[in-house]
Amino acid sequence: MIKIYNKVQKLTAAVREIQRTDFRFRTENTKSLHNSLDRLDQKCFNFRIEDVIIKDYFRNCAYGLKFYVLQEEHSDLPRARKHFRRLRMLYLAVWAIPIFFVIISLIWMTSSSDIGNG
Image (cartoon, helix red, strand yellow):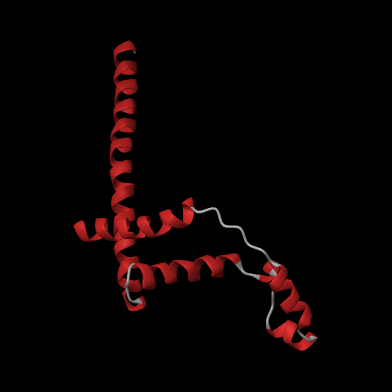
């Protein structure tokens, strides 16, 4: 558990600086570079943000954080997914069991009050 906590702290510290920094980017050089390329090079080196597949982009960001910040190998991914599924099932069980008992209690209380009135 301490190992996981340390990883979370490390990742939080890395992301904190990025979140707190106000970045200002100028695009004049990028536009100039793009305009200086011929049509074939413009197709090869696509500058259009609209063409970025957001799901793939964020997946690559997550892999990069995992590899470079947390220094974990991609070969650990199947084991991590299995562990995550177990934690998710545990989380659902922790919520489902008390809700189940509340529902059973409500059913029992309403059925026992119907028996007493009937």
